[in-house]
Image (tube, rainbow, N blue to C red; front, side):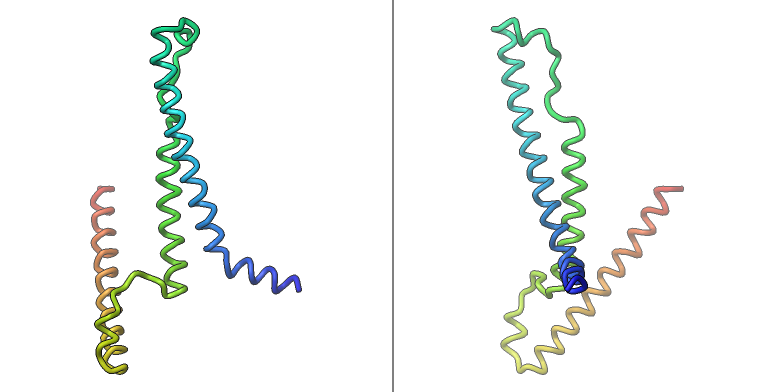
Length: 135
């Protein structure tokens, strides 16, 4: 019983991580926007009410945007692997369906091979650009 529960959790780990990251960066961006609005309102009120003039308030969280950006990047990475596992990537498939099944399958295989070649090329040139940046 315990092994099945552990396997179920591990099997859905990418989904859980994606859900947590999505909630985290959306809430963080919402907090950032609300704080910016509140601080701007308080700054405007400081001209009229002396109470607000005593505090030097920041415009928003200094680290909120960066943290939400990294959470979004990791969300995209985990979401891509999760979508690949489910074979749920966005893909136009109507051209594969108009041909006979064998031709459609071969066309899909060829398009996947082209996609792998493109990604391999991008990784190779990205590594060379990163190496040049360290020189």
